[in-house]
Image (cartoon, rainbow, N blue to C red; front, side):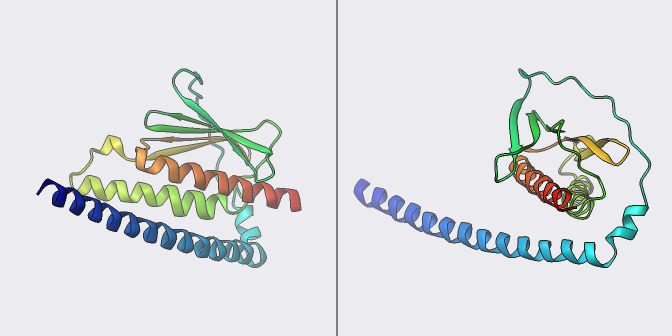
Length: 189
């Protein structure tokens, strides 16, 4: 009897493993397709009119920087595929802080920063959190918020608050990818 139950558990685990492997493969394929589409959209925006949007400069923002204490956070370097440091990502409880490398000058108007990272990722996460507040799932003080510190149009750092653990990994990879694409475009100019 106990052997049959154990064998049933093993069979279920094997089925679950197969299902998870299939889902991971599907997600990877979908991600690759989305990245190709995004590159196409970024290229189209550059060719067809993103330059016009570049002239509409948002007002400069100022942000009082909280001190970075290594004991309070984990530091993850965000590098290009070639190993060039783009920024340091400080991961603390419910907060991510991206501090750009001193030798990098990335313009807030360079795609895909506003069109992808801000509008498609951060703003969408805020909208989902607002919907969760309406459903009573979270309190309003738990809505994701972000601040972009800059000097003129040059990004200095990005602070994202109320980051739940499930979003931390997604944000890390999205931010790294965005900064790398921006760096590539800056190098090409």
